[in-house]
Length: 97
Image (cartoon, rainbow, N blue to C red; front, top):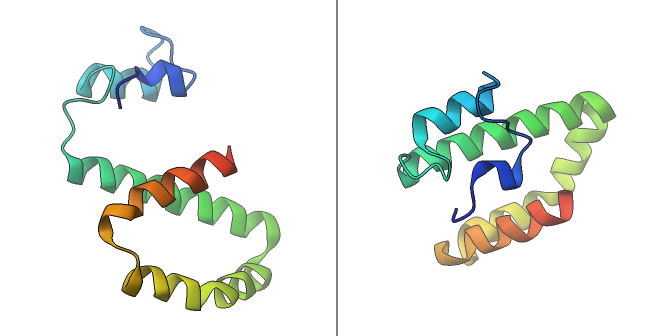
């Protein structure tokens, strides 16, 4: 991330919010986090979004959507080179915004 966290999120330095604390601990561009730490945070964020969306639409429809995507998810695991994973993630994240 080359831009500061405030470019992406509503963070105000000194407001003592979680994002402010995160920025204070890891730097304004989160430069003090390792790649693995960033991936763990991304995983937690995605799981939180999945849980929120599941609560919104209901468990049964969410399970049906997951089942419909199972072949695609497996193909990603087997056929998409690891170097393309973050690019695909970035494309999806930008569509979700």
